[in-house]
Length: 133
Image (cartoon, rainbow, N blue to C red):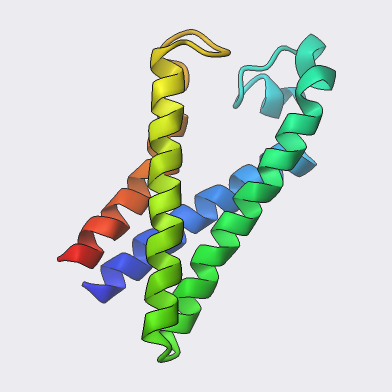
């Protein structure tokens, strides 16, 4: 089961690191702000600071999960497991927040954020469940 935890933790981390790239480095590209985040080009200047900051928190969260897996696999089980559980729980709860935001139609039409919510929380949830088993 440990390999399942590690695999889904790294999948979750990769998702968060990819989102960092989109939000911090590529956000001004129409394919990113319009195609992924559904932000009209006219609104980019207003949300640019938000996207930049949130991108870095995603990087730190994803990096923490990677460090947790590395520590755990290197024999530092208590440290690694703690980082993995914390970061995966954080990611899962972030997915719930995105799901609630989608249901309330905050910032985009209801249903448009469901994919993001599942991507943010799904792999982390699998890792947490596998960790309990």
